[in-house]
Amino acid sequence: MSEETRQILDMNAFRPGVTQADPAVARRLRNLGAASVLFYREPIEMVAARGAWMEAKDGRRYLDCYNNVPSVGHSHPQVVAAVCDQIGRLNTNTRYVVEVVDTYIDALKAKLPESLENVVLTCSGSEANDLALRVARAATRARGVIVTETAYHGNTELTTQVSPSAWKRGGKPDWVECIPAPTPKTARNFGESVARAMAALQARGHRVAALLADSIFSSDGVYADPQGFLDAGVEAVRLAGGLFIADEVQPGFARTGSAFWGFARHGVVPDMVTMGKPMGNGFPMAGLAARPEHLAMFCRDVGYFNTFGGNPVAAAAGLAVLRVIADEGLEENAAWAGGRLKSGLGRLAKETGCLGEIRGAGLFLGVDIRKAESGRPDPDRTSGIINGLRDEGVLIGAAGKHGATLKIRPPLCLSAEEVDHFLGAFERVVAG
Ligand SMILES: Cc1ncc(COP(=O)(O)O)c(C=O)c1O
Image 1 (cartoon, rainbow, N blue to C red):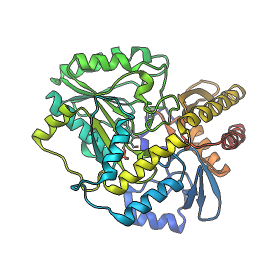
Image 2 (image 1 turned 60 degrees about the horizontal axis):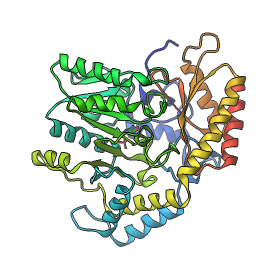
Image 3 (image 1 turned 180 degrees about the vertical axis):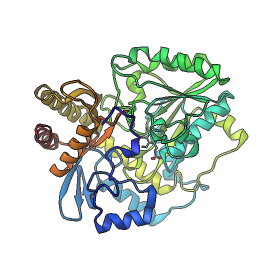
């Protein structure tokens, strides 16, 4: 297969018509139609999950090293109890004062830069990014947006326009400029890349409203280092009157082990922060943290209301997640278990020709799979490893421009035994 660019939803995806669908899969396809996206050549029907493990209908157990939604562990008893308790007492639209909601926002703000005094809770990361872009445009009275070339920021019309990894047809809008992912070799030139993008936008008549970046560049292939490389790009955008939006949907909530947020590893203070996925440990919730003056400028034009975003049950789930991260030392565990995982993978890379660069921070790792002879990206082998691990009872995914990077992102509670279980399975699969 050539080094074609892969669309994010096609990576590690079940392909109807290529693989035989069992009755449960066929029913799903009938129900969801073309919008159905399933993992693996042979999709798995899941029935339960606990900690880092998921259980399929046939009784098989899988070590979940992919899923950063149930980030503090599947079905965490404290989160389950908080949700059940709150939904048994009060859940409503968001136009009442409810104590748990403000208690949650205060606790969340204690984790954020002081300048981001306002938090708007939403139901999905897409909604949070959509709002952030609209706020940036209102605050700057500019239109241009800079993103990385394999970024994913959401599924609304506006966020799809800034998600090159989701584009199947058509070109990018003229107000969008894409920059290459900051690899370890090129990250130090991030500021120059951003400056070039602003000049390109300007040449098409657009001033920059925002640099929107996932601060661990997950869909680009996981680029975390060297710490600090974001700074020059952020400074360049601000000098031109634009804002920096840190998309923390993937690296946020202690995953990187070295900071609670991905941007904090780079020592920058964003103008806006968006978050989602791990925020409610599976309860659908997301949000935007912004400076009051920016939000006020936006609300002068249109205002914002979200029926479900930040409802009492979401707040209870979010509060429980923050407490579990602190009580169980999950940021420290992400650093420790992630270190063990990364060094184990490093050992295996010395023994096998197909493993290339290993990147990432804490429990968010990317491993390039390459052809041993040429060193070129190998998406077919990547897919073979992912499906081989599935057969070994271990779940991971793919990322990167060519779909040739393994994305390893287990729950933050991963134990030493589970790290070793992963490494044992991984060794068998890459050797096979
Ligand atoms: C970096 C990033 N931003 C935003 C989103 C969109 O979040 P959601 O699927 O909750 O709308 C995603 C989802 O994968 C993401 O990875």
